[in-house]
Length: 332
Image (cartoon, rainbow, N blue to C red):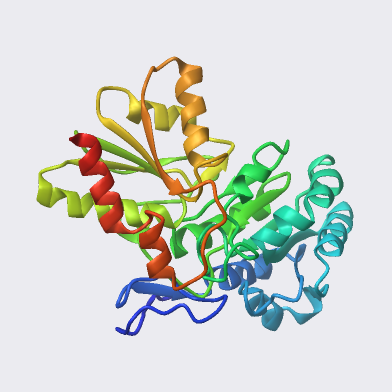
């Protein structure tokens, strides 16, 4: 799929499907939907399901390509996951899409007991993870990873961009056991193609080296971490960036190797500072006995406001200027 370029216009948040791409940034359209359709061409076991959200989770691309393998379950998330479990029991490989808030809050028990406990290959695709919509707490999944991290057998993937998503889909299909993919949908930025990067399930990757600061990030915050690293060059601050697309199982070895030494360590995530990447990294640091301070950049432990995404990202510290200011303040 060839990346396109977004129109050079003011970034908007009009509804659920607002893009977080910067004006003029290189993007790819519906990378999840296209990747799933490509994977299904070579594996007839792959099926797609959604809870009345095909258009808003890019599942409609798969539905158009394979209508006989697509199942519209309606606004019934528990039914969605129960049906996916039954399909997996017969040997199929379901990808089931809904919004992250509904998968985590409404259907947790069905995912836990119907899918995770028997370790079935069901792939949950959650739209609007973290702060990727301006619709407020009913649709902002700011605590989804915190909810899911304690579930045995469940793999959690928080992709940065279209490259991550396109490469993750076939690997998730081929992997045993259930997964939860924090979906970036619509016009998704293409970032990692400039860093000699390849997605590997369960692996973190060092995208750039730096002597002063180490930014450990996941999801769309890896894009912001890379942008902040470049901006900090103007302040004579040399920044390393470590991308951790798989939150569970976590690649502690790669991350801890980068955190050794006296550089400032900062985590960046589009998620609450409770229960997500920050606490995953902090736990690994303590367990390894590093005695290292880790500074979190993430969403507050609160229900967030509604509004335009650029405004909200600035308000809650996810924008590049806020990241730069935080790092400079920590460096003193």
